[in-house]
Structure formats: structure tokens, C-alpha cells
Image 1 (tube, protein in one colour):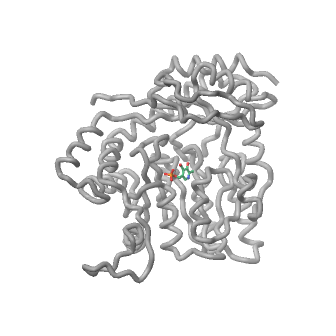
Image 2 (tube, helix red, strand yellow):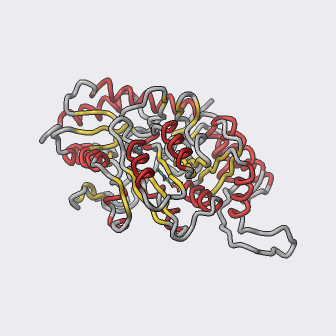
Image 3 (tube, protein in one colour):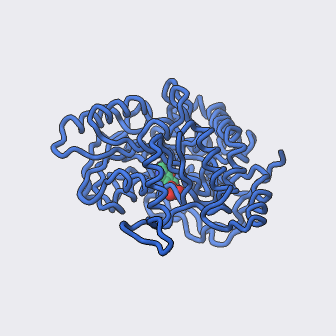
Length: 400
Ligand SMILES: Cc1ncc(COP(=O)(O)O)c(C=O)c1O
């Protein structure tokens, strides 16, 4: 199969700032086709062919053959019983909360160490996020803190949204048992972890609902898009109803409830179908990239890589590492100078100004990771020589 690399040709036109506010790069309108991105789109080669077929069918709409085929391929790959293709991972999370009847005043637990896309849907529903810190074993949500909170809290939360960060599995079996014991819904934010498995079962299929994102930087992209999965067919049917403006089955469009316009376009689903043909290759390549970083940096005392839990296979969406006693701003600047993207680990949600009034259960783990961690260029189009060169720059800039 022929493969084409599609790389962005322009930066976003916004100066990139370090955590202290200093400018890392002033790169407006610079042509950047050779830039090493964190995770660039990587086409399989069949995308345009399938898009042409969509045009031939004239189903330029948020329904059609490719939407159905994309949902089918996700079901077959992950083992999920039902799937709904939507406009984004955020939309999928929003639908999950709406279907579960979670709304104004409800508490929803969530990983603190995540991207804000995990949390926004809680706010859309007028519910209150309660943030749970990570553990050191997985860097993901701590089952111990979760259980402690659920045993001690006065107001029982309705659900937990747990993130499998950077494509690496949270301790999902333990987390599921805790949710079941306390009678709260489990929603897996597998936006970053398509292809990651725990005991051979795909992330996204343990919970009441799971979601995947196909944003431009994900392991599989439709430029923008998402998928909601669940073993509960009735819930997915309800989510489909809400995602298509909650139209009652009357020719004049009767409405008993309000809905959203969240269904995925047939054109974008065509990209998704082509991308799914190479998903397993992409997972293996991401894991290989991680192994290259380990090969060239594994013996550097100051560096520790994101762990992988026993019995799990992460998709290593982004290689993430922490630096002991090293100021990584120098490293970021040096990488930027050679046109290589890197980024601090996500700033935990309990530290975000927008959530300053939210409840949280923290013990410093995610804050420590944020203070010392970077994710580095992990695009599947990269070669071992690219990684070797990046590692040399990192080693040359390990300053206190
Ligand atoms: C952990 C996580 N959750 C949710 C989202 C939201 O997905 P989307 O951008 O498709 O809305 C993303 C990615 O963007 C993410 O990384």
C-alpha cells in the first residue's frame, strides 16, 4: 500500500510561550514542512480514493455508507458492541453524560492529569467536576485516591471520567471494580488511546461508555471527529437521537427534547475508514518510536519515561518523560531551534485557573509530573535517525 505523509505547511500563527511566559518561538507564517511534530497526520494512501467515492454517491452529509463503515471498523477493532461516529471526542463525552441523565448540580469525578477536552462536557451539563490525582505507577488516575474519596464523600458522584493519558492505560480493571462497588457510572476517555489494551481488552470498552478522538494530532485522524462506544445499544440509540437534533419521528420534525448537531460527516468518515486500515501499524510504529527514545536516552540518569502497567499495551501516542534536576525550558528551546516540537505534560485540571473553585483530591503526583515532564515529537512518519538527532540535542542541554 502506498503511503503519503501529509505535514502542515504553516504554523498556527501564534507565538509559543514557555510556562514562565517567555516566547519560545515567533513562527507566524513560516513554512514548516520539515517540522517534527508531536504527532502529525499520517495518511494510509486510500483517503482520497474513498472521499471520491463519497462524492460519486453525493452523500456529502452527516450520514452515509462511510459513516456506517467507520463505525463498523471501530467495533471490529476494539470489540465494542455499538459505536456512534460524531464530530469530536468532546461531543462524544457530552452525549455520554446527557444519555446518563447527568446534569445541573451533579458531581462527576475526573482525572486531574488530562487535557481539558475531558472536562468541558461536565461543564456543558451544568455538573461539577471533582478532580482525582494520579499515581506514580501509571501517571493516570489513582485507584487508591478514588476509593478513598468514594468511601468518605458526603455527596455521591454520579460518574467518573477516567483518561488513558498519552495512550497509556490507567489501572482500569481496579477502577472499574471501585466504580461498580460504589454504584457510579464509568466513562473512559480513550481520546488518546485507540489501540491500547489492558489484559487484551481495548481501552474504551471497560466502562459504561468509552470515547475516542480523531482530532488532527491523534494516532488516527479524520481532521476532527470522535466516536462514542458502549455495549448498551439503547444508550447508543439515544445518543444518536440527541446527536441529530432530537427529532421525533414525524415528517414535520416534532421536538420533545433539545439535541445537538454532532453527527460525523460522510466525507470525514471516509478518511476514518482509510485510516483504520493501518491503525495497528501506527500503534506498532508509535511503540517503536518510544523504544528508540529509550535506546538513546534510557541510560541518562536524569530521565524517567512514562511507565506502562503490567498486562497492558499502551499505544505510546506521545513519548513522555520527566527530568530530574534539569530545567527543561533549555531543552524545549534547543528543540524549537531545530524545528522540533515538544510540550510540557498537561497542566493538571486542579491547577487550572478556570477550575479554581472545583473540589479535588490531590497528593502532589500530577503537579510533580507537570513540573518536570515533557512530551516529545512522536510522529509515525519519523525515522530512527530523527529520534537519534532529537536525543542528542536533549543530552546536550541537560542543564540544571
Ligand atoms: C484526553 C483527551 N480528552 C478529550 C479530548 C477531546 O477530543 P476532541 O478534540 O476530539 O474533542 C482530547 C483531544 O483533543 C484529549 O486528548
